[in-house]
Amino acid sequence: MKKKIIILGSTGSIGQKTLKIIESNKNDFQVVLLSTNKNFSKIFKQAKKFKVKNIIINNFNQYLKAKEKFKRSNIRIFNKFDHIDKIIKKSNIYYSMIAISGLDGLKPTLQLTKYSKNLAVVNKEALICGWSLIKKDLKKYKTNFIPIDSEHFSIFSVIKNFETEQIDKIFITASGGPFLNYPKKKLNKIKLEDALKHPNWNMGKKITVDSATLMNKVFEVIEAKNIFNLNYKKIFILTHPKSYIHAIIKMKNGLTKIIAHEPDMKIPIYNSIYLTKKKYIKTHSINFEILNDLQLKKVDVNQFPLVKLLKNLPKNSSLYETVLITVNDYLVQEFLNRRIKFKNLIDLIYKISNLKEFKKFKKIKPRKVEEIYLLRDYVSSKMDSLGI
Picture (cartoon, one colour):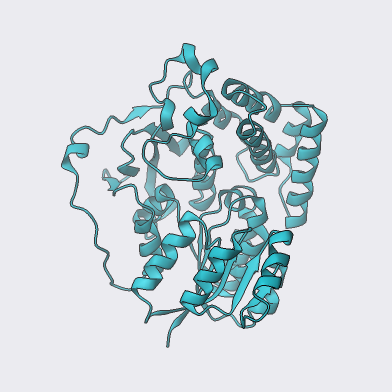
């Protein structure tokens, strides 16, 4: 019997790579649900190719267009993730990939936890802001959790059979984006086009900007703290221009484990799908040229000042992480819309996230998903009022 698969965000990079793996192993899987924000042309091609009966199109205008254009199709079209409970009736989903961006990914993550045997998540916002809620449901429904970011999957693949107290330190790597060795005196002259030129990865604009500021690594440290139940004092960031080493784990037994692979997300995705089955993927030979010149270095906080935000994060999960995510999302969008400069982006993220009004949320633990969404809306409205 084919194993049932769900992919939320199927038209994005991660979703497409997931489908490509499934296509190569089509006798193993049946895709039962796909989603997109607004790319209805692509998702219908995917649905037709993989014989998918249910799709979700979040953008309401694109949903209406799709309903009209494909009204004779036997594919069921939905507009909201709320409909997941109508689409999926039984807890018989082998694997769900959450590859959508933004905090809107939290609620469907929680919904699919109760239906899925394996929950693969690449949505940073859900893991940062709602981990305490996700963790509770994972335990309740006995669902296996698999992080998909290359750094976190690397750590997961090594320490899943170890206890937390056996870990001494964890290092995650950062390429440094386009500005690793950029002259500091020229930071004021950086243009949007410069920030979007990532040297190693082909990603969306928003995450590419986060990589340029190194805010993505701030978020990844928070994720690692949550997922692996670690103290912030055990997690470190190293710059590594080639993105070949993804994580280094120093154990208390004296062993240090280094996880390396080419910068291609198909590797963690493939291994997450075939987590318990011996099936292999064809990859390139080991790149000894890179291994002989890793250039691993501590982060220069003068070059990447947002890394200093890690010093003031609360020990336990709180609503403050939602503040941090929202402030960053808002300001990155302003930068993408060319309303602020790159240097202003960095300065404002640091300044606004440290406002007294927002710091009070460090002491409040999220108890419901609605609290997180309400706070996101509140912070966004506050940002509007600041006139940035």
